[in-house]
Image (cartoon, rainbow, N blue to C red):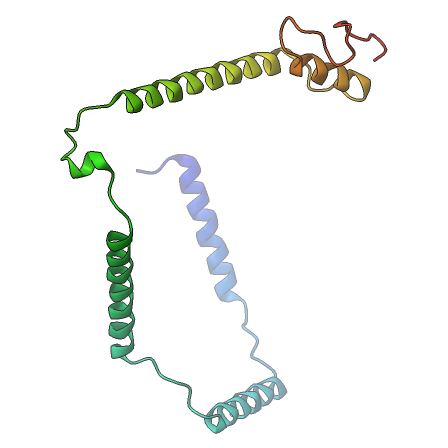
Length: 164
């Protein structure tokens, strides 16, 4: 069962459709019909006079699929022949870690931790700073952000200029 507003809306639509159906539908002008027929004839004559375009046949798709498969197999074959797998893969993945690989992994982890600390500092700074700075105040804000903690800024005195 429909609600009262829905019933009123449907009744209004039905009344509008009845009114529209009672209106006379004008036909096109005879000149417009003749112009449309002449344009259709011209277009039919023009397309039949053109040479036939190449038709796509089913075997074209099969040939394209076979070519893409051959390309994929060729690329895979090339990669297998020219690239040696890592030593851990050759040993079945159970190779003992060497001192060099442990040191390299530790250095990478340390570098990532330092990078993460730098990003955290930058996020904290950007959350506290006003981004509406311009001119001299923008220069001072960037100078302060880029200066290492405990070191003097580019001016050598480590103080902020209050001329913004």
